[in-house]
Length: 576
Image 1 (cartoon, rainbow, N blue to C red):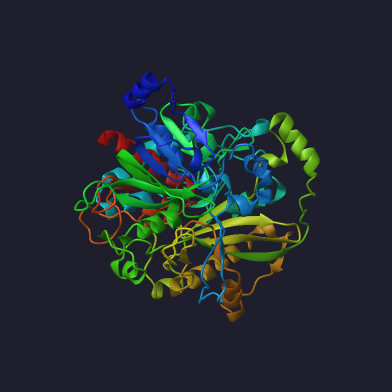
Image 2 (cartoon, rainbow, N blue to C red):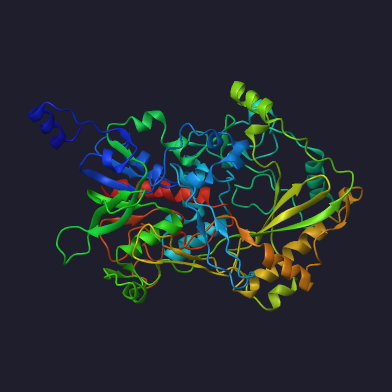
């Protein structure tokens, strides 16, 4: 208990205890905190949990959505498609994509404690070592290099055997994993199926398709078994991993749910640029506002969409855009909300013969098994495996474009295989896009959704790279292992107008938006935060979420966000 609260206790006879989860802003007492963390998504719980390991620090964690506890569809990996998105998602849509048939694209963002880690596909990939070395180069901070972040990756992870006792020897590299961290990571329960056998046989039959022992080694190129944030048959989210019952009970941590941060405000004299005050409102809307001031720092962890929205509403952003909405500029940072890459996704399929479709799921029986001992088909979401591929050096695409990857160890494409019995194929995920999108304000109303432009296919490289992905798949399925299985392509030929039309009419998102509050070198005129994640030109305010990523990783962005948050917690601790 802080000294002021202790004095009040003796003066009034009323005990004011920290360490509680409040379901609404109206329930939250007026208190003084050392740190206020805005956003209980993937990064926020890491910061709150790590800071409150020090009993001297008091922390308020603010989450716009409800609690994750007691939600079966969130807890059970195989029930992901039953998650109530009307309640646990922000409901964002992109603006019409001019290069993709003027379609709007749904953009899932977790609106629940744990954020997107509570509703995503649970794929756990760190990315290439070259990606992080590129971060270090762009920021001038060697602390973001692969060698430096690897201990934080292991600090986050608790490698866990899959349920059911499956033997996973030779399917991963024990040396690259962490065993005492928070996020449980495992391979699937189901052993290799006939389709898997053919996949891995192809790595032996055809050159150019190596077997990759572990996608999280920093050298992922090749075909590997997927690793997922699942442990003991349950989803391992930021909420379950970092906000355990014991952490929630800490006397120096308060959590308030269903509460939206609307702005951050100047603290003290109007002449300074110190920002340690947060304006909060009920998530349901209305005009009620309460302010809380941190004695040390405010940490924005609202995600790559909402953190820039909060900054711009607060007067931190592009002066021209803020002026157009009548928002007074506190700090002119034109990069806020700009240069947002994302991993786009398309599907290429092939007709198959002799395939065996998965039997229909007996949901009641599967749930009974899961409830009894956390085993069975509901311990998994997707069973397929991934080929991390580089576009060949002799491909014609390089006649017109420079290589956007971070290095020779980084893939250009993630090919995520799927099998339905009648068809086989892969999702083509472009992990090195050149197209860029943006986040901007629609109005000064914090409850209005921001304007989100994914910018898909606005750079010609991206469409050409997706074509190359389809060509790689055709070569892969031409191997002898598929002679009695693949009948022929079901998707158009990659060089045809029909293929381009199919891409434009079906392209969608993997929800891997980054870079809207990007790191850059200290003193740089571009970027939003310095390498220590402090907002440029401001005291008392940091951003810690996927938005700070300065170069999109060749990975699903959950694990990189955990890594950022783990290092950020140490940076904050060392500052105080």
